[in-house]
Image (cartoon, rainbow, N blue to C red):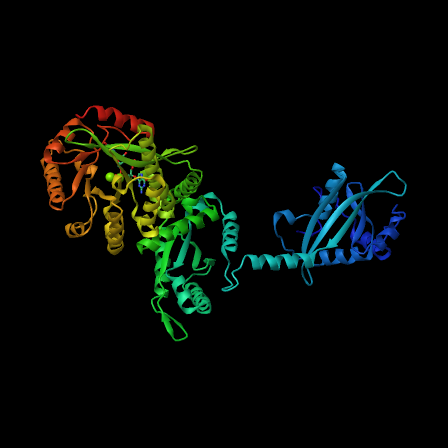
Length: 594
Ligand code: C2E
Ligand code: MG
Ligand code: MG
């Protein structure tokens, strides 16, 4: 706040009474000749600075004041070096009084702040109307309450809230606030062009913490903070924004090339290992950055973008620069994951059933159960989109269990509806993630038991990646499935990297030839040669074959001639709702030709 004696628009008519008059008033507490009446005694009785103001000939006079007001006034006027703080605090009490006299508002409250002899002083002031002694003039009572110690306590607390206690660096909130403060001072173009947030993530920090203990972890964090700080320039801001995450806000006049220089300096700072008691620890730092251009000058956004980039840097091992789509992607995934969780909990997923056709006689061999999700907000979401999200989030376990139960239950319903067992099998997909995380044999056993379906009528479709990730576990699982008479099919065969030896060693019954081979096979001798090779390989290993993605009659015909046993694809039928699938089977069971 500025407490300088301010002049009205016309400099010759000061808003405040001349100094000589004020001095006289201060000595006795009452302006000579004024109508302060009984208020003089009242003012003296008040324990805080208070004064009566009146306005005469465009000038505001202090009509009466108490002793405390005198001290307050002197202290305020006595210091020429006023601190100007936040705009909301820059209230000059004379201007406020003038405004009150003009507007006749019932009251006003404001805070003033000035640099006193003992530091910053803060007063909370109020202006209220009182009646003059002769009743025909309104006076203003100005009362000021000292809030200095409260504000000091508040500001200490605030500082604590904004600081990381371990390193004394700003924490995430403090960092964002400092950046906002800096960006506020810049105009639009400056804001956009020249700033970057560089996020640093200590790779494997949690492992160090676990093996050496939290004390050593703290020490490491402090040393890291020191090392990073030592390679920064004056004006760069370093903050600790999370357990093992730091961030730098830097002015980068030369854009990305300057960011690269900073990243390089940080990398160099960790070339030599850190000594913690008797251990030498090599610290690896992942670096991601975001330039202000993309964030539109919003500090919180800028930081989030840098964090998205550092997440990628942890995977790639190289410096990553934020690109707008990275965050959009992350957000989309997040929304998808939350909605999928709700859908699973609410039982809102469904299964569609695509027929598997015996290419020799055109009969329905069975169905593949395919998950369907029609979200009320997002609309129908493809499994190629939500299955990866389910796998990443772990939701694939409840989803996979549900699909197992639902498809066996549907087959049991069809049996009941038909009055006898349908001569068909049910295929269901099993994610490799579920293989690792869940007790699959138990889940299969339960699904069979609850539905009363025989293991022989169930086929589990696995992808090649399942075989590669953990061969021992896969062998155990397949053995357990075999023991329950469950058939195992290798889905999307030809797209993965499974080798022939591993296929031979595992109890796999069916190879499903991936759609990518079938798609443009007609007239393509290379594709046909590949398909022939797969079929003969399967034959040699005692496996049956199913071709995926048959969209034309010619494909079905050609595949049959090549010796492929079963086929699946839009030519026969798209995935169908349960009732439609049953009807499809029923109709087809009456005729047996393709
Ligand atoms: P998939 O197991 O290979 O299933 C076959 C996919 O090919 C299905 O896609 C099916 O609709 C599609 N398809 C079948 N015939 C044709 C055709 O003639 N032309 C074309 N263009 N496409 C055809 P969908 O239903 O979108 O499923 C995609 C993938 O999502 C599945 O591939 C499977 O890997 C996965 N998936 C679906 N449901 C489940 C589930 O319940 N659990 C797990 N773990 N994965 C599932
Ligand atoms: Mg499949
Ligand atoms: Mg497939």
